[in-house]
Image (cartoon, rainbow, N blue to C red; front, side):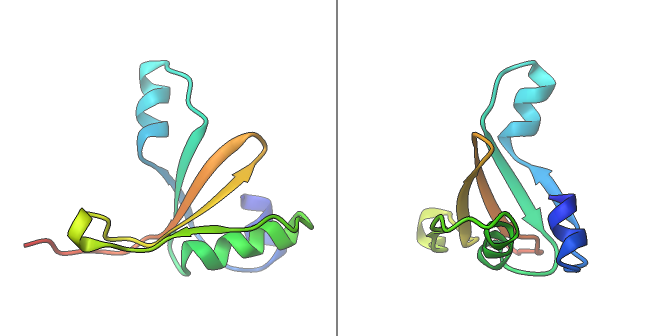
Length: 95
């Protein structure tokens, strides 16, 4: 991802989050990586990734649905054998 950010001059900071980190700490295998991007939507970044690697794969999108505790729109891609979920990093307030 660092190569994608540098080559496309996005200026993005990408953070790995979620269960992948937990699984690595526990020594468990995981092929699902959650990535948070600081300056654009997950879908926008996913398209940049696929364009960078010259892939015509489709980017899946899971729409936000606060009624089901899904507060962030999520883009889904598969890369190098990993399922990746990409979201925009932002602050949220819950009641």
